[in-house]
Image 1: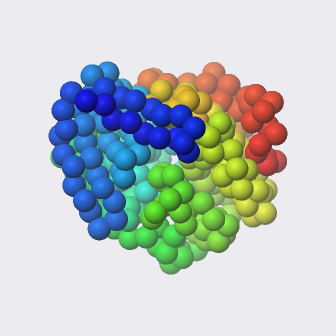
Image 2 (image 1 turned 135 degrees about the vertical axis):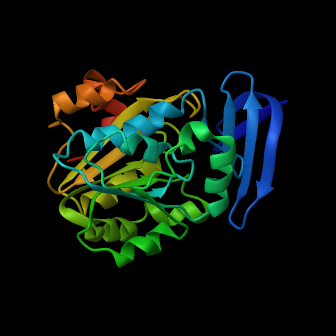
Length: 277
């Protein structure tokens, strides 16, 4: 048996499945867990691959440690989406963190990941973590000048995740951040979703002083090259704390100081897509 994900009717990702662990329809989406031949456990939402045990660390380390190794003293972090808990796990590797709020619209994703994906969900019971089951775009409207970092760990811009790619959402994020706050988000494949990536960075540049797209190699996400984007009025990813990065890298499988710098190097075709400053 194979799990197959279609990319814009242009290409497909195929993963060989040993068995289906669970398929469940929530209020928002179909949640599926599979045991695969190569990737270990695989989580999909509405037929789209979210993560696998084999390579999830790449995504979670890069969306978290790139920004947190720039900030001098991050204490309060909001994760919007990310119900698998992997981003929270990585955030708590930083000893300055006092509070993490995970705002996930679909509680069933969190509860099922706690049961079936402890590798990512293991830190969701930490006393510094608060779980909120709401629409993240609405939730952040209640905050002003509060967070050091907001991570948008979203699905693709369809269904409940669509609002998390729009200009009004980025304005709400800026309002919820401290004046020296930062945001990172996953920003799709530059091969298959180049128009989405361009629209995202165009919108961010209207709102933030610094917008920097960076790359990671994630085998599960066809075709392997994936982007994330950082925004801030105060910080640039180029100016990171090398000592902090070195210390954190001892707890990581992918991220290290050399990767931090290298991730900012973009091929020419990608530079022509994104609006960075």
